Image 1: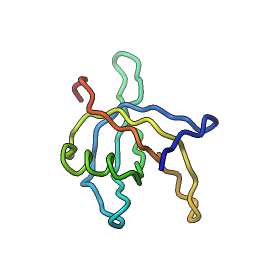
Image 2: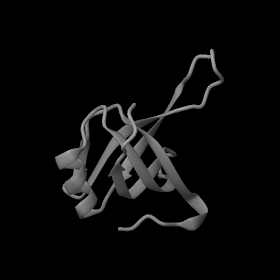
Image 3: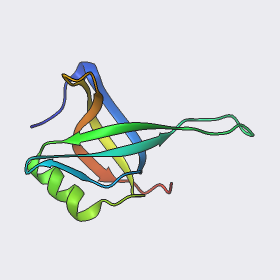
Length: 100
């Protein structure tokens, strides 16, 4: 399943702050922290988002290569689920060359 709705498109760079959770044999999710920009001398904060993955090749990549602390680029779309949780639904995750 490709997540590419142009009206809800999102691209974030952040680091994984949770273990990868298996929702089923066909879906996983994890938390990613995205640092907010801060002015020099001010405290910086992280926004934390849930990333939801439901594509076989992306799930395989995540299980084999991603760990807590990995800096990644997530491309996908924002979706609101029936329980009113908003998640980044992605089928495009890459390891970033940036350090956390």
